[in-house]
Length: 86
Image (cartoon, rainbow, N blue to C red):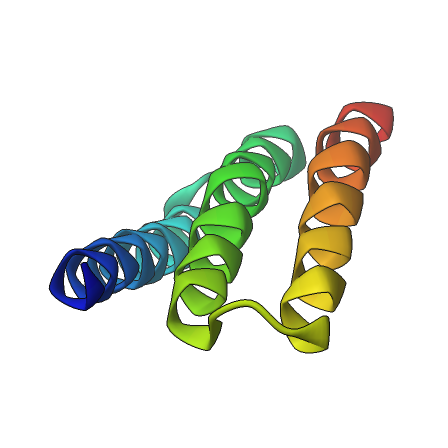
């Protein structure tokens, strides 16, 4: 069971890292403000939860994992709203 959790955690962290890098490239290559906002919004909405869930799987169940879940809920609630408001 731990090997499966390690594999899922590594996959989430890897995908989150790739999305962060692709968002950074999108921020550099997009021509105007609205395109850059779209690139950063898509990256934040998907990359941050992937990275946080990967860390959650690495961490195991403790008080720290409850804090990470609360951060994950906050990120999922605020990032799309903030990007849309811009």
